[in-house]
Length: 160
Picture 1 (cartoon, rainbow, N blue to C red):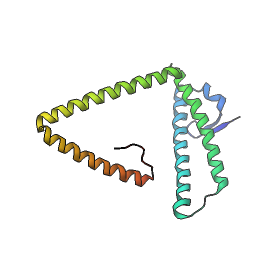
Picture 2: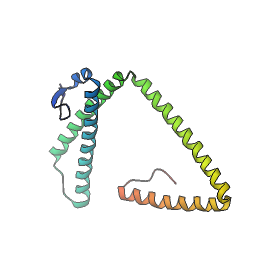
Picture 3: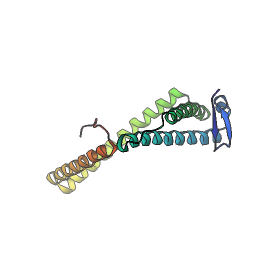
Picture 4: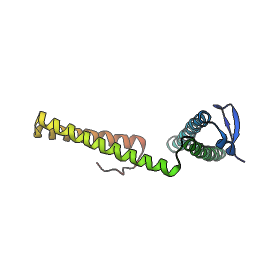
């Protein structure tokens, strides 16, 4: 049986116990698990970076242990999320639907606001000046974006 030693709850809990936690406890546990997963991801990335850039090989046993602990933390986080949704009275399908509706409404509002700002600026500045500013902003953003991709070592998928 999987167990997790929670510093927030100050005890070791089994994965089956997650469904018996009260709302505040499961919130604390979920935050702790999420932070733990992010810290493990950072450690793994750093180990790979040090090996690739500095030539320091990482300990394969350490990597195996970290990945194993990460999988356990993810399992607990999934159960904690299910418990949170149940305590909040939301089933998983409904939660996804709500998120989708939230995203649709957010995108619609942002598009309306951006269109309104654009129209007001064209009225105020005139179409030629606005287009010149817009082109300058696009070029600057593109330069910053490509620098960010290079800094992070990401391959470009989004074309500007």
